[in-house]
Image (cartoon, rainbow, N blue to C red; front, side):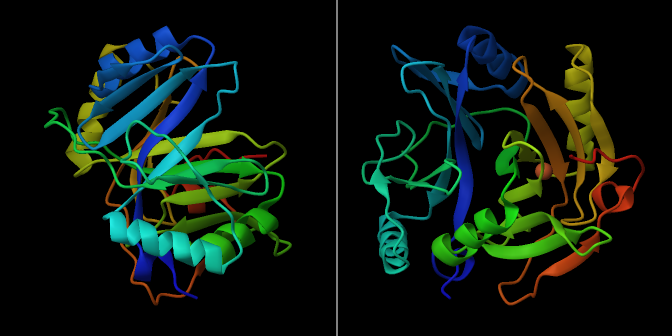
Length: 279
Ligand SMILES: [Fe+2]
């Protein structure tokens, strides 16, 4: 298997989210994440900032979320297309304002859409460090979804969390040298779990915490340290209830490292204390 990490590394670059009140969401991400409006469209607003970007679309009219993964260059994107075709995985072309022409989108067995492309040249943005780094979902069909991302797309399993019966409950997957760029929790629904911004160090976590405190946005999970990935973290929510994570010290994983196995427990998800156990 030619993995993304080994052959065509991909990193999370931007999100396309859908909202019933996009103006409120745009204001929040401008104010809290230092994103700037780079394009206003009839049904969407394109925002970008230092190592993070987002398209916020008004719900309705066929709006769908997608998650944009950046390839290093056009030849890597072409190699990925050939790799996907070789695995009988069809893709569609996508017109994404944050990617150069030639970007593609794939759809997983439950309808989630991942786009792959080469980012358009961006301005020099300033703001505190928070690089968009991973996205996570809850799924009712964990085994099938993970098989799709590993066998068809080329993600590599970094760690699994199993319950007392040996059932796999969480799978962390990587597409480059970082512990996870995509993860799935077994759950009773198919909701978006969270997205994460990787900072430079613990003091950045402090500063982001202070920023949300000043805006009276309370932390709902953390601070703590995850077992899998070993990263420091806390989480807050945006006006739509989407969960944002701020992280530091995320583990880097060599391509040949076999998957780790962790027990399903509060200490696995937060070695510092209480954990948010999905159900
Ligand atoms: Fe996370």
